[in-house]
Image (cartoon, rainbow, N blue to C red; front, side, top):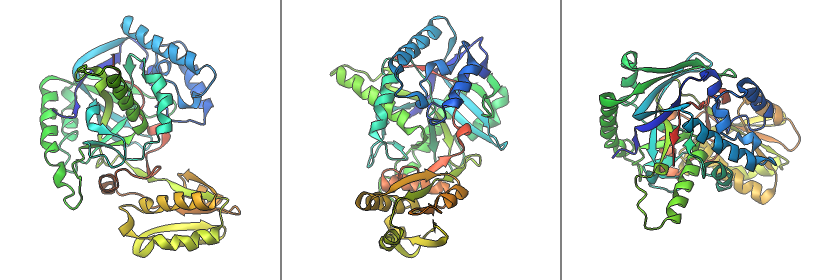
Length: 412
């Protein structure tokens, strides 16, 4: 059995789709104004914003009441027929991004029995970054009594031969078109087609054939049998896993192999698609002794290493990080910075833009590191060799290009 398969997918009917689809709850976490605008745009219309708790609103005094209302809304949408079921289906998705490029994907569900978010896992589905366990309980409170899940997880395959998703694009014109709309708040455009029956079975056969080849992709690495990697939304998938494990623990001896909570809806994308751009996330250190920092940094440097530009006030330069210490520059630098800050004090922040890092590094006691972009082929190598990548290794596009909620699935 494939660990990614078709699902009984829920989609809205007879609603304004432009007000239905909203961006992933873990975006704009510091921008309550964004979510206020979204709620104003939606009003009382059926919408996924009524079925999620934006992380910008986590910890509010009325969080418990909000979660209760979310669960009631899910049940009401099911009862009133707002959500229609497409049985045993995939949804082929094309997302037009802000730069005009089109990002293809396939919505289906993954088997949580084959996913382990912890470093060192040998599971077929692996996290790409370290899971921060403190981030799971707030998400559990939202999911544990929910009747419907909405996916914003983007799952990656390492399909350099483009045998899985790309053939669907060639036949999309004969598939039923499910939706075609502009997304609110400058989210671009999205279209989705229904994949069922023989077309779905053809994809399943291609995935099964692909699965037999994954161990051969990186013969120089131990534990290379990684079928899928979480590109975005790892903490949401880890929450689904934790809720499923809690369900099993509460019912010892009960066969839950067919329970819907065993699976989680995701969008599968090919890491080799040109629309997928991995942007580096840089490091800025504040309130540090720069002279000591750079003296100690020599211990992780080596001839011919990864080049990393640094800025400290008016001074700039390049350090070369020892390639023997990790598959990526960030995998060498981040553990060093974590240990150094623990022993010497100071703060760290994670910045997307080069210019912002250069500006922040002008402050007294500040030092910035501009990390090189990660090549796509390095992601699976880094996950296989290191168990997971350091936190904030890369970003899959800009915030407005993250997944918008559209499809759903019953989980109880």
